[in-house]
Length: 183
Image 1: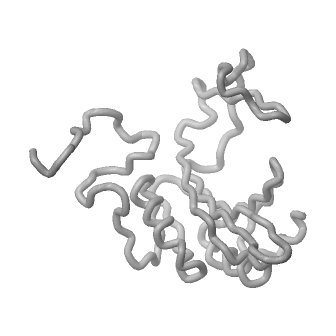
Image 2 (image 1 turned 60 degrees about the vertical axis):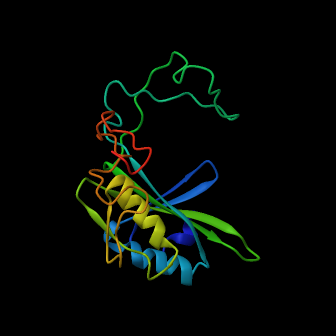
């Protein structure tokens, strides 16, 4: 299955895990990769763009979990007594583009880019117009900038909100709760 994506431009690594294919793409070439996945491979539906912050991942104090073929029991301690460090990540943030091929031969694939704080990635709105709101959400909550986005503005937080609340280094507490426009 992985060989079918070998010609996708910008792919630096292909991973198969848990019945999913992930194509790790050079951030500068994400538009090329997404265009090829749409046009040459038939992935005609962008279902989501999901950003994750891995600040501190792989450092002491962060333990992995023990999984089995049946999954893991969320009621048990996460390490079940076998503390181990998770595999290090290439950079702080990942942005995953979840793509579906809706046809007689359905399939799904994830294109993923890795970014450090302050790095940006080109917008894929030209490939999938539905990326508009997903990219705005990733900007609003994580601070990931999408170059070429026509309206990269807050979508969930107030316009005057400072910071990006889903970052791991976002300060906890101290935010006043507003129940109305009255102060």
